[in-house]
Each structure stands twice: as structure tokens, then as C-alpha cells.
Image (cartoon, rainbow over all chains, first blue to last red; front, side, top):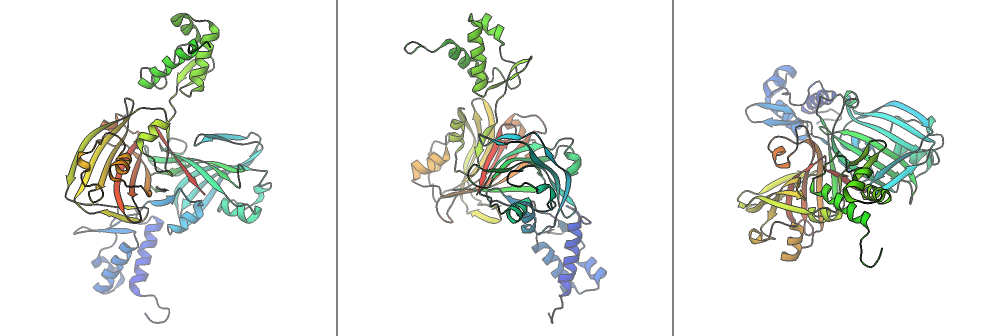
Length: 238
Length: 238
């Protein structure tokens, strides 16, 4: 490797990984074989072999003996025992987050939900935010957030296309002390299915949660649906 | 209330709750109305009203205005951030655990699984235990446990119809230091469906886990399927 020159095998493997990320090569599809890489890119068989190794090592594909190398997108692992924004979680997974705001507005009624045996309440008026979250171009999660206007009075005017946790911290100087959540396995139903672009009978994870910014200070509550085919939730008990 | 005499309304409500627990009154069914209780038990309308209130307050039924009171079995909440046996979890929920051993035996091959990004291995031979766990008469969860024979040499001969965590602690003096788990939302598929006695396309929670009895000491690994229609998982992040 001379100077800043990227080795050929890395360039080619990055191109293939980029195609997987964009969905041009999708789950279960065969990626180019050694011979196809040699022909297509005019490289040696050593380089072609290194390309395949690189793609496999990066976790984007699995080699099946005698059959080829197949796209294998690992599910995103989301820690449920750390306070973690969608945005940071995507970065951990090497994916690019994108957010589409579906609804934003102040609603008169408060919101109340029982989570882990305790009923939490956000008295109205509150700010309601409905967003669809993507990894690159893939819809991953649909969320409704109910946010305290007491702690975040002018949140309506903030940038709501990134991490809300970031907004709470940077714009309002709030530090998040605790997130309590309830996870349920569900079937993604009509109405949600269309947003997440999944076929009938796709499993999903329903997350009801409450976020505190200090003892008994309810900052927001959420109700989100994560695609079960794209996520695994990591928990740790001691 | 004189001496140890239980008030009538409590006696009757307990009888109704017992019918719900046994499944004689099942989810969604209407429980006797005020008038039916008056007739059936020969009590006043005040007592009948108190019976219905009591059943509702106990969380076993919900009153729907103008329609009646309907059985509403809350999902069992299972904490995923505390080390918790099925047996204790059932006791918390006021249910009676029952266990059916489907397979027990020593297998030569070890078991290896990636959990939360780390691969954990139990080298063979290991003890394999396949159990179906019930709440009263309802199948709730199907589990396979892979257990270290190094830490539990004669576990084959122990009582395996209760809490394994209890066996580890009482029989082998082991204290559990950590449980790492991975939760995935799935559709309960053929082969498992029959054991859990659920219809097609019932959601489930797949739990892959590893239990340690000290730093890096893998005591057991598990792969369990919880009925999604019966469980919610509680998590807490700080």
C-alpha cells in the first residue's frame, strides 16, 4: 500500500458492500464469484479471493462451500439495558440513519401508560411526534413519542430529524437518568405494515417506554414498533 | 366482618377468580353479571356489585359499559434485567408453575452460540434438558438448556421439574453472577406451535442466553421460546 492508495481488493469489496447496503444486492442473493470478479474488474485471482474474504469478514455475506457467497445481513443488535438513541445504534451497526417525520404537533390531551407495573402520566398539553426511522433506505422502526412541553417548551421548532436524546441534552441541558421499557412480541398489523414495508405476518417488537430526566421527572413516553426481522434486543441481568 | 369469617363478596369473587385461573372462564369470556350473581348465590345487589368490583380490581376482568365484565388475563411481566427463574416469575404473577421434562440426557457435542456479539462455548460432553413450562394448565414457554457437567457433574439425577437456578444454588453451591440474553420477536413455527398449543401466526419471543457462575465461567446456555400472547419483557436502562 503506497501513500494513500487504497488496495484494489478493498476498493472492490467496498463497492460490493455498498451494493448490499443500498439493497441492490439483497438478503440471500449470491454476490459475484471469484471468476466473475476476475472478469468484471480485471484483477488477479489472489485479489479476487481477498475481495470475497473481506466482504465475508465484514459480516455482510457468508460463503457456502461449493455454492458461492451469499448476502447475509445480520440483524441489528439493540441494547435494551443501556440508554441508546436510534441514531447511535445505527452508527454502531455501521448503518446510516435517516428519519421521516410523519406527524408533529401539540395535543391537548395528556398521555398515560402502565409500564412495568407503574402508571406514568404526561399531563397535557404535550408534543406528539410520529416518525419513521430508516437504516439507509430500509424502514426499520415506526415510533410515536409523547414529549413534555414543561421540559422542552419550544421543541416544535427544533430539528426533529435526528436523535431526540441529542436535542434534550444539547438544546435543553437535560440529562437522561433512566429509561423503563416493556417489550412485547407482536405481529405487525395493517396500518403499520405499509410504513415498514413488510409482508403479512412479519413479527415485530412493540416497545412501550418512559424516559426520565431525574427522579420521577417524566420527560417523554414512547410507543414504537421495531421490525422483528431486522432487530435483536440485548439484555444483561446481574 | 366477624372473627375469621370471610365476607360473602370475597368468597364469591375468589371463586370466580379461581375459575379464570383454571381456564374454566377463559380470556374474552363474560363473567356472571350482577343479576346472575344475585340469582346464583342468593346475595343482595350490593354484594353482587362488590363481587364484580373485586374481580375487576384484582386485574382478572374488565368491565365494558353496557356489555358486561370480561375475562382479561394480563400478560405476565418478566423482568429481563434481573436474574429470575421461571418458577419465581410465576409466583410473582400469582400463577402456579408446572414443568414437563421432554428430554434429558448427556450429549457428546458441545454447544456454542453468539450472544450480544460474543461467542460463548460449552465444551462437550454437556447435559441437555428440554422442558415445557406451564402456568397452571397453560403452556407458556418451551426451553432447551445446555448445562455444564464440569460445574454440575451429576445433574442428571437431580429433581429437574422445578427451578434449575434453585438446583445450581442449593445442590452445587453455585451463585449466578450474570445472565446475558438476546431477545428476538418471531412467529411460533410448526414443531413448537404444537407444544405451546397456539394457533398459526402467533408471535413469540425467542430468548438465547448464557448464564455465568463467576467471571467467564459459563454455567449454562439456553434457547427458549416464550408465547408472545402471554408475556411482556420488562427492561430498565440507566
